[in-house]
Image 1 (tube, rainbow, N blue to C red):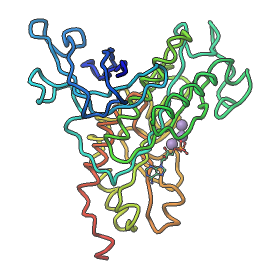
Image 2 (image 1 turned 45 degrees about the vertical axis):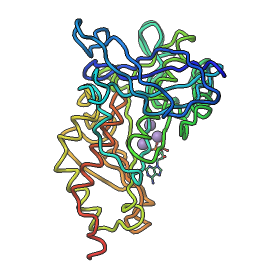
Image 3 (image 1 turned 90 degrees about the horizontal axis):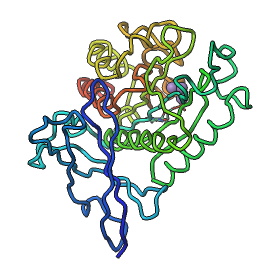
Image 4 (image 1 turned 180 degrees about the vertical axis):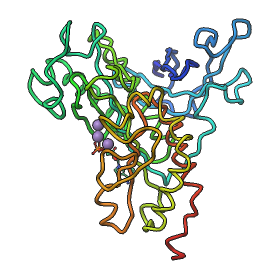
Amino acid sequence: MTKYKLEYIWLDGYKPTPNLRGKTQIKEFDHFPSLEELPLWGFDGSSTEQAEGRSSDCVLKPVAVYPDPARKNGALVMCEVMMPDGVTPHPSNARATILDDEGAWFGFEQEYFFYKDGRPLGFPEHGYPAPQGPYYTGVGFKNVGDVAREIVEEHLELCLEAGINHEGINAEVAKGQWEFQIFGKGSKKAADEVWMARYLLLRLTEKYGVDIEFHCKPLGDTDWNGSGMHCNFSTKFMREVGGKDYFEALMAAFAKNLDDHIAVYGPDNHMRLTGKHETAPWNKFSYGVADRGASIRVPHSFIRNDYKGYLEDRRPNSQGDPYQIASQVLKTISEVPAKSAAAA
Ligand code: ADP
Ligand code: MN
Ligand code: MN
Ligand code: MN
């Protein structure tokens, strides 16, 4: 038997965005534990905005497990928070009730800033560094500093070793800003992996004395970019049938549901979606081929392929909850009959 270090990880009850929490328990197994073998556990919800002081026990229900590459015999256990009965989802548990479909594929582009001493990594103590321009996909000390690349590489290794579908990295437009992409089939699978990749990044950067700033516009109303989490999506129907009529009906449904999308696309998005620096204004829906100033960008390949493939919703922000983002995308898609192309 081996003593495994099980890190149970969950989302707390803070609003508008939950924080990641985690604690360790040691259990003996004769092999790496499967999800079914992991027991329910509990925590004090009164310390995480998930319960009143008196009856404060909340239950942790494992829903995904990954090897923890940073620990000998470690496992990362993604959990849902349940009520004390162990079966009723806690009100803060957004994951339990989302729409899911393994034929729906999601690619999230998570942008974020490294922060140190209250400012983006690489910013001088007073004033600003040279304006944006050379930092996006940049190389060299004056563009990316001396530690950011070490961190993103280490994070990439951790994700890959944990079995997380990390798909790539790039330095972003603002100094100290980076992006990684996570791809998954099904909303729960993709979103679990985004949350776990966020967890690994936050945990990794502790030893560097660096924080991760996920806010979508940390530098406010300046010429410095904000952070998004573009949501690339496709369903089996979009990939295999699609068609112009279906696409137009889909875009009409997205336009109609604008408020429902913005409601779950991350807090303070009006600060970022101003229409000035990136994407369209938050209160006006638009789409366009290869248009990075639109709410939804339609890749060239989509048009070339007779309106088949994936689309990119550019509005979700870096602080958004990928469970809710994916679910809202699926909800809007489900309103459009998936037979218009065949009928036409
Ligand atoms: P860009 O920065 O040009 O917007 P990225 O390369 O950063 O694009 O991200 C593109 C994302 O699209 C990746 O996460 C990728 O996994 C995702 N993607 C590619 N094909 C599909 C598809 N068929 N369905 C859903 N997502 C997809
Ligand atoms: Mn990208
Ligand atoms: Mn980007
Ligand atoms: Mn993008």
